[in-house]
Image 1 (cartoon, one colour):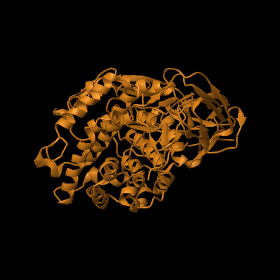
Image 2 (tube, rainbow, N blue to C red; image 1 turned 30 degrees about the horizontal axis):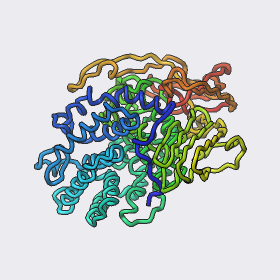
Image 3 (tube, one colour; image 1 turned 90 degrees about the vertical axis):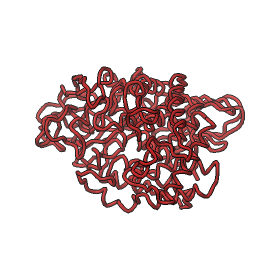
Image 4 (cartoon, rainbow, N blue to C red; image 1 turned 180 degrees about the vertical axis):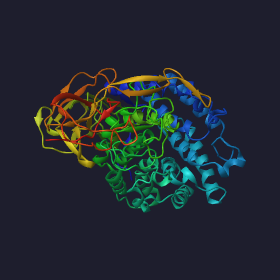
Length: 603
């Protein structure tokens, strides 16, 4: 049984830099997709003629919690408009997806699984009492169609069957009817058994397969956590083994895995799809809530503070489909793309580079991260991710004042109307831990018995600057949860055009980021110095980041990957210095849109 639940976004409040980030998202692409993008604006889900499969559910999955976290009444009304339209189209037998009765057998019910999950999200935010019955009818119909053989899982539904368990668990908690467990078993029996596919993840195939598709990989890490209870199975932390294999053979410096669009090995010049980033975040959020194991929260931070902002423009109007650890330019490939199975513009910053799934799905990243800041279990509350935020219930209010991860000082202000247990997760890298000014023995969890009234708790710690080993005898600089890169200056080339009836125009046009500064460096010293300053209105500001690291480097003859002049070689052609030592400033990975992250250390 899950150890914790997350508080509803309706009683959580992002503060400080986290609120600024969510406001940028609301003012950017996420908050405007229903106005400008045909696949949302004119979707068959609301009676239109455009796409009627995954894109509206994907968008709502992030747009709904974003609206409620920001208390944005206009966005809340727009979310309700979509939910109302979807409910109004539900058939008498419970079928909810926008296709004809005759087309059900050929309709990939991944969309059924996804919209059921999204309706749970909407209920948890809105407490709209229509929703449990709607989900009940959707899943009862799904059960009947699957059990009598009228439909079966195939394609995406076959490989994402476990996503339906978000709604299945929600429904069983409310109704406890046997058919719900039967549906769970049918889905597992028909669905893909990922635990038997481990050997297929160890060597890049460079051909498109469902079983190495990077988004499927990051989604399925949480499978055991969301299925074991209702299936009556023992929890054995199988997600750890999956993550271990994926990381060993496909891991990046920022916790995710290469996949452009399928698993791509250990090369720093292969990409990671944006959908995979936000789905991996959601998997880790789910795994922490189920297990209470702090390792998932540690890893979640690395994704949220590095991988997610790196692939978004500062104003969040544009995004990449694929990001690279060593990314010296983002220009359309004139010949064969460097990617294993993606197109020639997948690394551009734009409205819909590559496929539109990421345009709709990236929206869940920051809102669900903000949603996971505090968790509870009966009279126990946990500060899971120590970013600026607050939660308020009838029994207590807790506010965390901090600029973490850009600094390591936390101040909790608590007003309690009853006694309760309060826990603070301490990041695994923390050194010299202090509580209320007093040095404290290192621990992963601080526990306090909060009494009725007002309480303040201050926590501070240090973080060492580390040189982390990477494959091919390369190194990455890391301090706490932040990974650092050599930033590359660039000019932006704006591309405005129309394709397949979809218009790209400012601010939702496409951009090439063309590298303009040197990037062929090696670290010449393992001594570093950190500098901090105030966090601006753009937390991961590409021009003015809140934290930098001074590093000493020398130029080397790195070279380009064979056949390319906008992609650095996977490994340098020479590690001999060809310049004097200079000092440069490293930027956080999430702020460095063009960057070198994995480079050698030379004597």
